[in-house]
Image 1 (cartoon, rainbow, N blue to C red):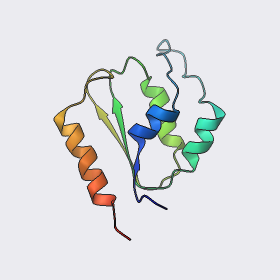
Image 2: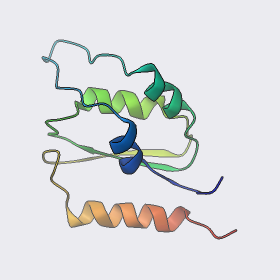
Image 3: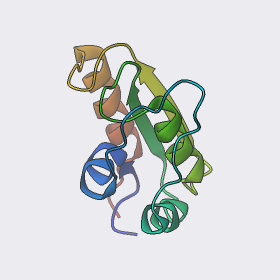
Amino acid sequence: PPHSSTCVWVWFCLFSWPRPRPPPAAPPPPPPARVAADAAQITAPLLFHVQHDDEIFSRDGQRELFELIGSTDKRLVIEPGPHGHTTPMAMARWRAHLAGHLTVS
């Protein structure tokens, strides 16, 4: 493969679907078939970043997408705050993940 790691933030922004938070008792709606099929084909090492208080994507929906991803080397990281809140620590974690997995062939 051309890349040895997957930056899901970019993938998620390009191919995901905004889903409003369901009422607490309601399960999240199922992901579109295309997203589910594509997620299963991701096999590169993965760092999946979720904002705990995301007002655009539900935590349950994000966890469901994470579970659909086919990689056996995947990590789910939940950061506090709303959708647009990114901490320097989170950005450092992304850089470290990519630097640790990128290789030159």
